Image 1: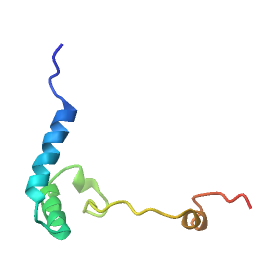
Image 2: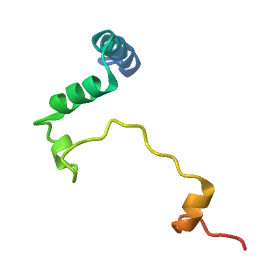
Image 3: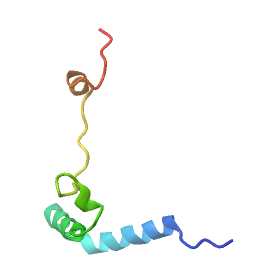
Image 4: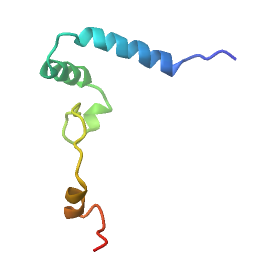
Length: 75
């Protein structure tokens, strides 16, 4: 049975195309292009802030998580 859609091949081609499109742009220019592309997208419009962040997730130290109640302390 032949595949109708190959997700791995699709993603590789899409990443290559985006890399070519974004060559020479600043992070702010890339962010602006992404936000423009998401306007009118039904999934993106459901986001509570109206914008979908493209920034990397912020990591928290163990101490930060403990102070905010994410981790129970053994002491």
